[in-house]
Length: 287
Image (cartoon, rainbow, N blue to C red; front, side):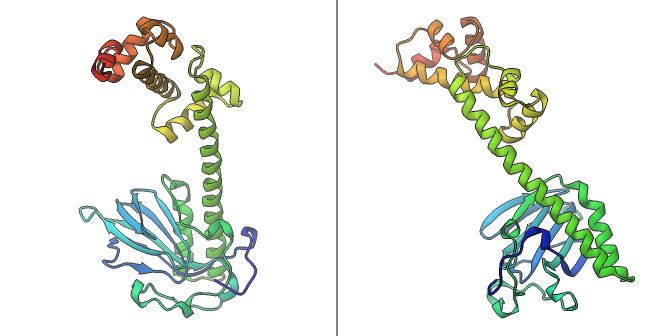
């Protein structure tokens, strides 16, 4: 895009060029490149899309936003009946009275002069993909229905509904980024305080002023481990390092790694490593 000031999010007013639900979605066997913005909402099915060289797996209730000039190719699971809602649109009403569908050429046949001329908002200048975004399924269906039926003010109504969906997606994106920063801070805090035997989900949550249940859920989403599981995992990791790099006895390592007692340490170490601390040290230290 070129030649104009960058649009702010509050100014977006989508001009929908195409809106359909494909109940037997097959994708295409070649790399496509889009002229306008795209949204793909997976109602049902699974597979992956490769977009701008990066591979993303998808399944039910995934939503994908592609800005103009995104190069992509879909690979779907043909054992399923794939249902995908597809939207082609501009984020500006500059071309609102144009009903022309710009199509989706192969990468090699892309014509730059066909790109709608306006500056995207920064927030929508990159690919956005989110899972479990079922909250907008009905809204997107309403948008498609208005676009197909073409009753009075259908374009304006469909545009307003799609704008709401895009803003909901942006709120989710911003929330995820905020949560990622929070969990990174939590991981750093655990790294600095793992030796404190009182460290727990409750104490960590209190330090960051969040409810333990909420912080635990974010932790599980981000790391695949609950807060308790991650603290144990980190302590075992530090204990392994001490077993291999120091002459500390097992009792000392247990206390330094934040375990309440040597017996608990030995039990947890064996559960996670399949060996006792002594066996681990003997197998990995060469004299």
